[in-house]
Image 1 (spheres, rainbow, N blue to C red):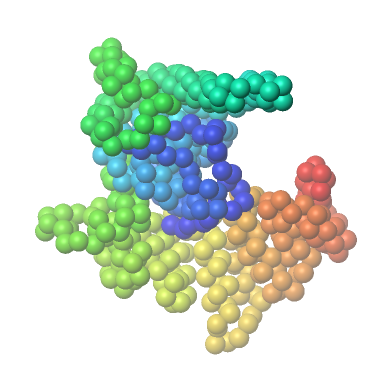
Image 2: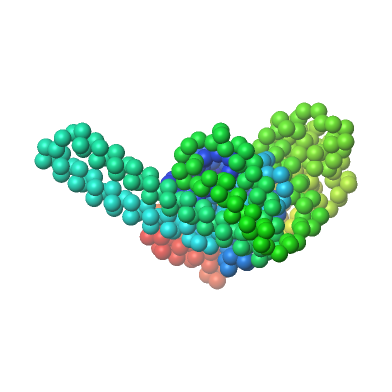
Length: 455
């Protein structure tokens, strides 16, 4: 479970955001302030729950991405493409797997209907009208029109913009509701979960700022739509006990990460022995740097489920932070046996090997870095993984393969938008590498990418 700041690949959504109707009116914070959480356990759960909904929407399952945002508000949103952003606060707030499925179905409704694209078109049209009206106002001012009349004119422009945006947003939200309900029915999911979510939203409506209701239909109206669907839909299938348990574990994990205080108070004796509670408490203790107490809980969980890779992953993470690289490596290698090609395990394992070799009593041995290089190359099946490129550059540099290091420094620069630097590194590397080798082909590929980007 790792975090990263939003500094290059995730852009700020601005006005184009499509918000799910949670408790609060909230847009994502500025790009520089956002923190994304990379967690394979959560990602796999989201993909499994969403896959039938994506298929029902006629979209490509393989193209979907879910991004977990460390934000306390109960929210999910899309900003274009096939990426759904989900706040940690949503996991803390929802009370069932059915509620999560309902949120995801609603976002599929936005994506399938192309609301992001339509919102851009709507805003472009509004902008044109505003410029025309503003231009007329400026011309009137030059001609000596009454200032009070001009002030009323500009106030009218603002009202027009708000009304147009409000109508478009409310229509989009209702359309996404209808589409999401169809997708849930096709997937065999119950709409009762999303109804429960909205019932709580209506109950808490008094505390929601007025701007929220300008762009989202009142939840009472949306509840009516959902209830009519439930009354007319065939009986749905229930989620399997195994999937419900996985959801409960992920929810405990994210809650422990996002709001540790919930798990740091004394729990009732019966709850204290539940697996979900112990998992959430272990994560909360880790977040509060109480690493040895966290390890005690995690090792107890791992003894009950020796093949659980997520327990092993967190154990490895804690040992790495304690600079116990041998224990960290053992734990991550165990996790990797369950997910052999998961970058979430491959990259930390490579980092551990690099760190372990740096402090080895036997001194630096280039051969010891070969496993790290192998793991990082496997991780680069996700080509845009900046950390994998950076670590590979370091590993190749430490083993005397400077040209290969330059290729990966070039890829890192390219994905950061530094096209001139990427092109220079790629050309230098290409001139030094043996034609026909994988490294040489990678350099040629990078040169082609830079040229296509106009660098």
